[in-house]
Length: 634
Image (tube, rainbow, N blue to C red; front, side, top):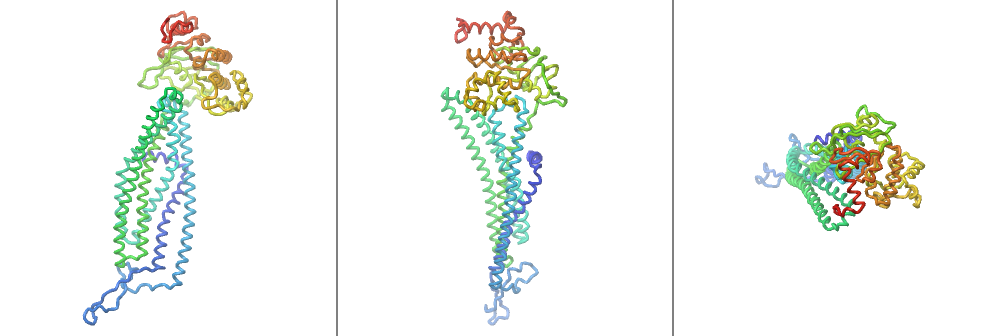
């Protein structure tokens, strides 16, 4: 209930006026069936005038002592009040003309009722759709904004497919459920209240008997509530897991096919689909069981009341029309209880989805701007790490330990070390994708925690090892980091990145389409595209994250010439495991298990025993053919 209350305050309350009007109209439409029942009663009692005639045997004063030849008297079934004589003369039969007049009145009354309620239904159906779409729109927007504020540790522990499932599929379920659940609940509750009053007005005894069935609906609701909610929660979790696995497999299709894992992956996916099928079936059975149980209660109560109602008509306490009206009203009382059972199932599903949505929205934002954070209009490029340590979680080991160094403006720093030594983590800390556990990172005498995040990242550009390109045109990809870039700026950056000549060979030039993740570009072309994207923002600090590790020697040599130009007059961090790349840098930082194990120029470090010298000798020997494929000396 707390989740529903919070959801209503956050997303439904902004549309309170529309929702109030819709719920009011829903309450009005709940009277539709009762009005039709009343019209039916008028038709039966005033047009058809169906009334049972009961002969009364008079024994007193009859010739022959109790002979059955007395004049019969008719009991008036309209006389239901206890102080009236049930055998008083009843209303005379209407003439044919009077019945025709009543039929015309009923005909026009029916047309008016149908027209009015059709208009009301259109009104509230449209606004249900409107409010539902607006609520879903706001939730998806809030989720998208929230995930962009979260630190990378959130994405480290979440599959991409699971995140997409919550934003698109989970929220999509709310689109049809959220407003209809509230509105239908209002409609059904109004039907129950109105029906209760009408039943008690028609016949107090039968009405009380009908209301006595209500506690059984409440008991049934309680019995099914928890099971339905648990089943749906497991169903959504399993669906999200399957979504994540499918996204991974599609992304890694090349590897899957290269290892001939089709049959194995088929079995895995088949098993997950079976789990979803079973959970969906269980959820459906529980929801159907709830509705069926409520229907059984309704059937038993209806049959009993119909029998007793017939006796009331026989005894003259109820007219035929009133009995028909009572039974129609009773159905309109019991049907909302059955419908509320189905609404309950939808409500339990909605609670599960809302809890999954708020789970993301409530995720703590660790990295945020401080109240007095400053905006840097320009950056010279001086970077200092002071006693920086970092671990991914409180229970985990430190990935970076007591790291201290400084880079002057315009200098290039190569960060070298074996895999897992903390090279990429260092860059992530500089960009504030992660927050240091201890220590400070300083840019131009500013602690980066005192600088606005957007301002900090605007002056730093990263060229990743695997360039990230998006579906769209070449021009759209190049200006991704600067939306307001002019065509001339785009072409200038492309020339600096050695991409312009290639683009001009394409028929569509800069409007040529880029395939998913750059599938229609070569490795060198994608790398140059990444350089161009970084250069367009004219960064003061440039990070090259192992940009040439996946390239062949010839392409690397061509790219290296481009690198020499774009690194000029910029503070540059070169993350690499290649000594041939590191030796071009002004300074080299050597990391091993998160600790600094070397600092200096290439020539200084080569002359010192340690990790850097070992890497240099190993790579030198490999290039000279002194090592076998297994890494052993020949």
